[in-house]
Image (cartoon, rainbow, N blue to C red; front, side, top):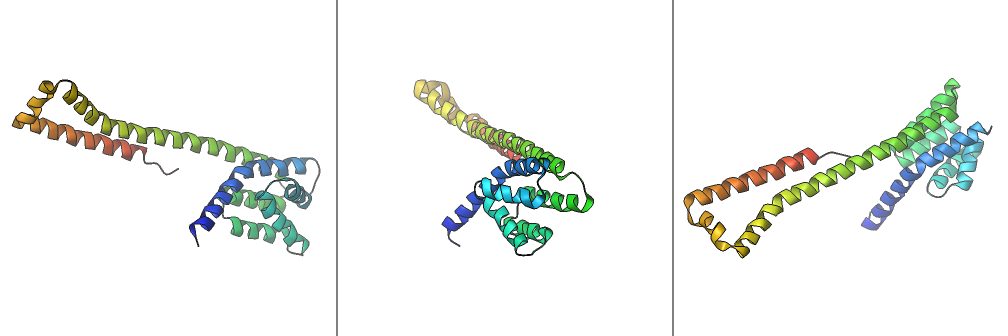
Length: 191
């Protein structure tokens, strides 16, 4: 596959993931208004933007061709491969089998997906903040050394003329690298 195709698939997956909470809310409100699951999916396929409408449209086409709704939803799960959609499909199947209130279940799943998205966004912000801090911790002392060297060379030159000065520079560099290493390690979180 070319990188363009992979890029489009990735963007499509991201768009579907972003649309999913709204789609689940739409299904829940359709079910609350008295529509059956198939009717709610039909409304979703007609009124929602791509790619959600296309994927649920495929579910609708498969059920109209005689495939049971459960199998159509399983096919959707295999096509899309998204953890949130997987949870929604499983909930729909289980709710239909047990007779639970599907509209409530879908509403709660939608809320959970939204909250998880907020938490992931906050975690990404904190990780990027930590990465920026490690860059500042690594670069600032070097810049400061050059500024002092430019402003008053006599102030910093004794470090370069004596063995003790070189030892202090080596220790400072070592501690600097150690600090950057630990900041990077602390902020390395899979989000």
